[in-house]
Image 1 (cartoon, rainbow, N blue to C red):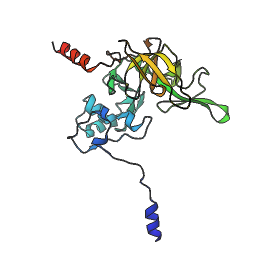
Image 2: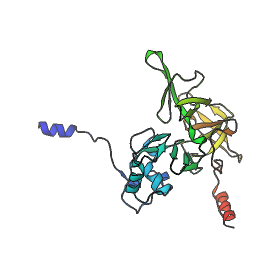
Image 3: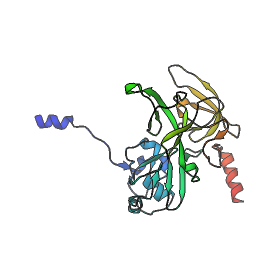
Image 4: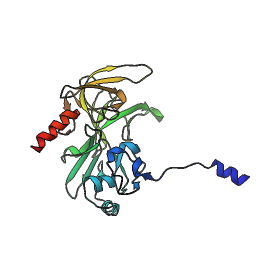
Length: 269
């Protein structure tokens, strides 16, 4: 009876595997290559809001043909994420992360395209020195030390008192310090990081407050299209209409089915 009781009380424990069909769609893995997909390691981003390093190097950048080759590349300490060497092939890379390959002189920032997929955006050496972080929380800890928490899991002590939750900070990856910030205000440029409008970029027009529910933010993109989303999905990327980071050529404009077809016809001509 005692052994049965112990067996009955056992818990599942952490899941260490991920099947290919259950992997996020934005990884763009085909169904027939295998049964399994690389499960991201625990890290600064959620499992379904990141992409493992092995998929970046093998499936996107084509630097390797197999997982074994990715392991050999990472073991040589050739890959940096946010200016730190990462040797874990399943390390989770998420929104606004900077991936650097010093041996080839390449730098990439991870953004979203207007269809909600991860976009590996090539950037300059100068721009790779910083990243933008959304402030998730501002609080006071032990010994009355103020601190803030960012979307990528950083805890930064003694921030500027003007920085509030939902604001965006410009974080230096060389000095590990805040070098600027942009407030969550009407008229600032923002990218959507969740919901049906994932990846769209627009200027905030107004904010509706709904006590006890989600605040709604209304935005307008460069094509004049208006859209709305929850305030939690809005990531400020610039003051006014000027972005602090380089953005894709599409400017985050979501095209309709007809506009998408016309664009493809023009490019084929």
